[in-house]
Image (cartoon, rainbow, N blue to C red):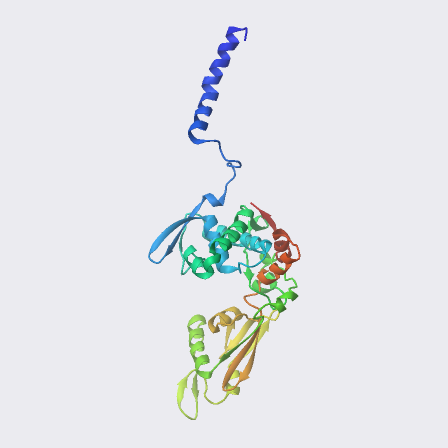
Length: 330
């Protein structure tokens, strides 16, 4: 460089601007690609169980959520679709740096120890598969009207997923538009029969009264006077229940129990029924409930999602089938 002044300026530039960068690189290495992008994997949560707390990354947490909520042998695109729903729920209801009580958390989760007990020798293979579903979807979440959407899912519908506006009576749930899921009829335990004796029904009615404010009636029988269920006959027993309303998919939305109205989902949860799409029948000296589907029937059917993945649909296509007019973004 012939001009001494230019040479001096260049030297100053190297000292002031390049030298600190070089020193930083030597000390810490090159920055990772896309480091400017917020990544939930770098965030943490605290899992509280067995009297201790464990700090884990959000990716580890979501992997544990998938292990608890969806069969690990499902297709990868179905697993990825569910990973988006799990992450959306986490962002909407949990959040980073949260202490999660494992046994009481609304979002079910398995620890690595539980996964090892569940899968045995296949732990490493299964864990990597679920972890891939989480990492491959990056920070993707489900949005409706630029807000995080409630990511409803269930194991299998009664043949069609339910309409959100019909169930909740609010236009804000229009993205939960019902869609056909005929393949759900092939799911294991699609039809389930639960039978109850008179004594068992009486016990559940007590629980239902505590949960929904139903008053137990005093019933006179030939044998004794008692509160709860009549001992006279199954005919009198079935008369205690009257289905008032069903939605367009056949799910009970309101049922009258001993003269008081109860929400269908409340009833099914107390009685431990797999679905609110049920019929009540007389059975020996008690009653039986014939149920179709597994779960509440809203949002994504896991069984149908897996069938769609088998046919080549991507996780985005699966989500867009079950959730209308939504966007999937980071």
